[in-house]
Image 1 (cartoon, one colour):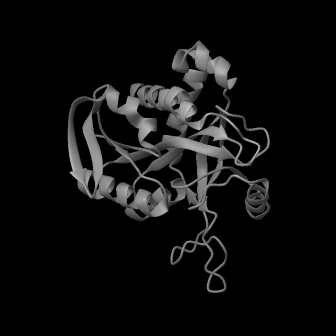
Image 2 (cartoon, rainbow, N blue to C red):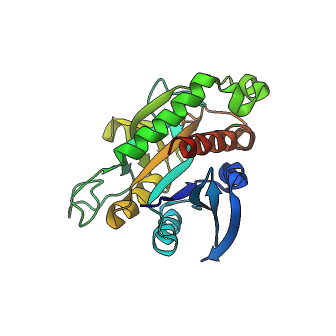
Length: 251
């Protein structure tokens, strides 16, 4: 089967350099979304900005599957760290995803996906392994080769790779209280973002293999203070380009 890879970015700026990798590209506009179709290293790809939040990301993922017939889906972006030990610039690849703001009690248990009888959605192990090998290769070569020496110094980057649970919700988590509340309920979660678990549910129901790759941009509490826009432009965007390029090389 010929692979047709879908690549979603959580922010438009996070996939600018991924789009620049595409050759023979065309742009298709559907539902106020721009899908860039082309090839990266000879592999057919469709790249799109998911838009923020679970509903918006669900629409974009569904269009990727139904309109562009993607065979595999990679979601890439930033996240806030919940687990101790994670630092800015680290990379988390999801083993499982959960919606931390889903609560239909007393009808079903907290966090359970209605009618699916499950709380977590598992990433495809082969795609997660592929992403992990790509990230490991890049870290071994040196993060400065991805982002440059200045960004390494500015953000004190010394990235590590982690595999674990990622939680999604339509909330920007920026307080110790909310961070701890999520950890008390979901102690295995490494980081939190706003789209991944919704995309995971779409892929589960369509039977499309997927994985989620997140770069830690903050510590999800009021103590985290970095220039977020600068981080996106100089680190997250460069990470995305390097990771996607390496994944395509390994396919």
